[in-house]
Length: 475
Image 1 (cartoon, rainbow, N blue to C red):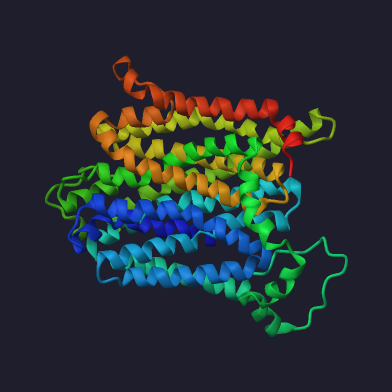
Image 2 (cartoon, helix red, strand yellow):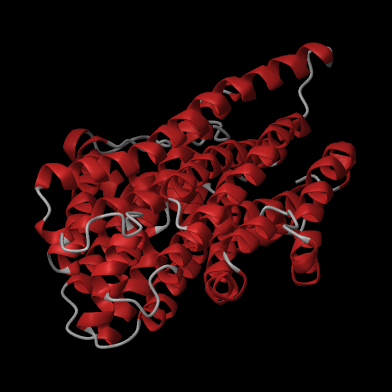
């Protein structure tokens, strides 16, 4: 549930982008660059900081304080009287809240044995794969009827619920197995629970854990290693486009158009509603039907990706162990990417055609296919990197989050003007590493080489040389 929070809260700004522009008397482009893009950018960097604290003080207290502080800034942004205050609090909130999408890999490896980890990673990753799409669709109709502040208020309420569940039910998963004898537990019962929650227990245990010099350099020590670097760069491109398109679709379909039309476009009604039927005056049953129709595609896509990934990853693992005489090699995880990439091309081409031709069915189905692919590919990459660095699960997760956030941050800047010039089919086709026609070959050539080249460099090369990399550059 906490893994849903960061991208869900960031996505509220996408649904509210035109309401914010009206309230603060500016353009949607300014709001997009000032809030959504920088929010996405800082989502990744925050995880690096929180992982350092988790290695020293434990998982539970760091999660508690990060969610408490981020909730405070989210409430502050909801009540912000001007754009500067809103942007500042929104950006700080993004930097504070990203711990759950880094902490999950720690928790999975803390609790579950090797043969169950890929299955549990599927469940965890489905939270932050679905969440960027959830808030624009949940709040799209809301901001057409009432103020955008209600969308942020509901996001705050959800964060309060998650925070209360953490306070009353979450347990510390970090266990110091390396200690010959565990220090005596002085406090008991409710006092021990409170001290563990706020970090007193973690502070007492910090002297038995890695020192600050090791903790500060741990992420850099992982990032440069070739068995990690190339695969993460590939994941940044795959996941980054999925984040960037979430912002780009809203802006590119609504620029220089009346606000009511834009809000309907954001929900992919594509002006199919009668022109004299205002969205805010639609019967609530009709609004609910349209919302459920749109969102059900994405919910099904995430569940389908989780289902396929769960059994396909286990099938690959079992098959490789049997063929390899009982030994497992991390590179076998990457075979899932070969299943994901053809679907990725299909999904992005369909999505681009839907945007260019204003086809509701094509856009929704293309986006649904893309979400299935992202779930499959993300779990495979997380599982592979975790198998390569089993003692650096937090750093691996934080660096992967940073990569996908930086990818999404960059896409939102160039995708809108590019789609305006060349059309959605061209843009999404190139991003899927497909040249649409000879007429656009020159313009798309560099992107074509980058994306498709990154896949072939990262996956087959890592599978062929991975054992050498792990032996030569192991931690």
